[in-house]
Image (cartoon, rainbow, N blue to C red; front, side, top):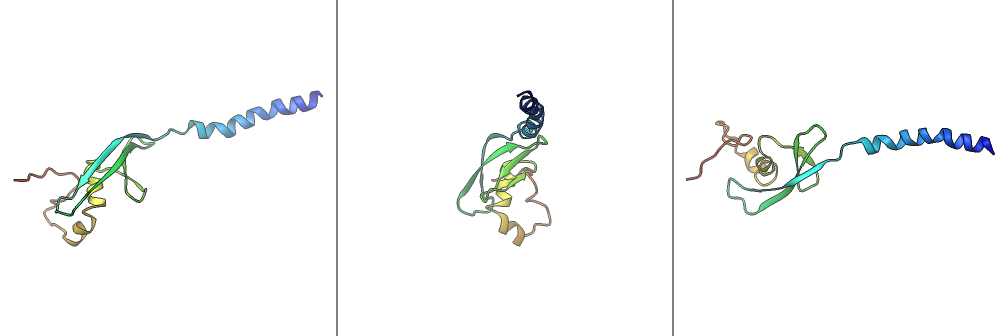
Amino acid sequence: MRAPLALLLSAIPLLATAVAPAAAEPRSRILGTVTAESRYGAPGTVTAPVRINALGRREVRLPGGTWIECRRSCGNTLRQETIDFWYIRANVDSTGDDGPGYFTYRF
């Protein structure tokens, strides 16, 4: 009777170490959402959640479910990677006007 009890007690630390790494992983935190609209007149808007990753950096989720790290602004990153994606690649601006979150003035 003592042998099975000793075996059971000796297996508990092994089970605890097998479960501990999953519980120790930091969970991502959703900060809120961001909405992006086209800078070039494309119709519609895109709204996506923003989270903090394991390294403490902000990430935005693309409509397909992929999380990408925010550049200067999560809203601008979302806009550049969704609504204005093809426009930016077809109309490369040598002045860098469509950079990662640069200020723009609309008059």
